[in-house]
Length: 429
Image 1 (spheres, rainbow, N blue to C red):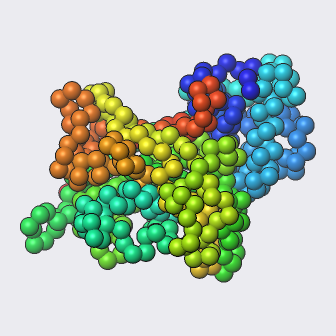
Image 2: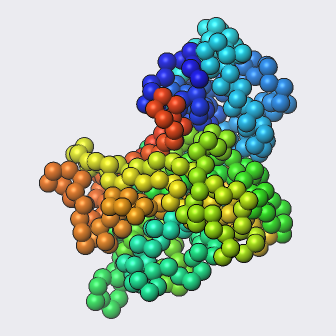
């Protein structure tokens, strides 16, 4: 497909994508829905009020969702409606498309609704009531297990049988570009008898995907694994910032707490489930399901997506490089499996709830999704520029996650998930 809007062949936001987000601008600080197309954002509030959806009967009774300050209302309409809106907007933006005249030939609406992407301030796209982070990156789990428990106990006995996870902190989920302050915390130095309190010394990134829930379930009513996919709205990149030294001291016996709660960054553009359909792939279990209990066995063997992922690490001086390249195929469990397991107790999910995949790592050098793995817990520094090495993140460092599917000129991508490290607060130390 070709658009009447010029789109760079390297843009992650081709016509094949149409991701949804929440933006504000200097002339209108009220957050509102938009889509990204090339280097433009289409303000869906302005588009709606200008009669943009006049040829889409399915959305007529629900047009108020495009004047809301989050995407929760749109997400709750369900996947058939998401599909219809995405296809309609593709038709509006396609050169000689059936509805191209609505915007291409309406100079007034185009001026009001189509704006430079660089002029839009992104926001967390949905109001998140709850956030659960899973641990479905098999190679990451194995690498970390090898570091701390050795080859005999690298993976716990339960690992291949269920999606392991922990409940995160929804209040500290932030949009790409929001600075991340180094946390203070308790740590135990090697050989010390008692902990000390101060700035984290082992600050790390974690390369993950996130999925937003579109349709909740009633308390006490589990979601079947084959019904779970229809309850997912779309996907983002997710950086589960981690204080490794704080985590090492606090995680016994109940797992992560302050080591994870200070910030989680997400990319601002939600790539709809339908946009990722052409990129389905078989996950790490290679279709083997016999070891799973029946409630986790999916009919669809291609249960993950072939998303090319990377992490760029840049110092305050502006020097840096891509330190991680991997694929989202390196997940042992799918998001439908995560949702099915999460609700198997009858736990009720809500529209906008966020699920994290866990750190995605490969098996090759440079494919690990965290510095913890790449540096062997700080023992083997990595080079990010000439004369500049890292074991863990320093103040001023900027981490950028990127992800893309497909071929040049027709990319389905996520844009960036970006965060720069600020020094720790001195008030508590």
